[in-house]
Image (cartoon, rainbow, N blue to C red):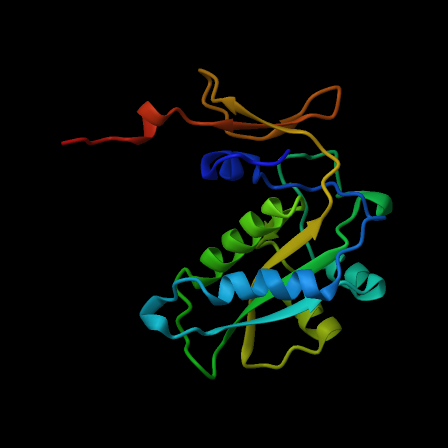
Length: 195
């Protein structure tokens, strides 16, 4: 789906966890996504983030092994090999620049994911990371702290936003057809003041 408005882009920018691994993403695309993040706001304009980009299959397997996939889907341990991401961007804070990264890594990850969706790609940001293993696999120096990983690829799953049920259960789930459902609170439930 090609989004026709910014709101459409945001709505299709769901956390995608299944991809067509045969569709490869090259380094130039990854550099373009990092460049989008580079141009984002940064607290006090400190710009403490550094990145590792990866589209190498063997390194991708190492990164994949460091990630926790979809905690609410108890019977699913992550995508099969043919549905794994074809690229990753590791977002790190550089302690040589600052010890406070504020929300810069979240801004960067969301911007890259919106950029990827605009290119017809999809992705998922991960905070559940085995950092010790990741730093070893990618030879990440001590002063660099992995904050988030963005997994990227050509989406193969259908994701649907649903209105939150009366029971208030916010857990995402998959139906019998494999459609991934994401419950969202109503706008009237989250705006608590208006003048």
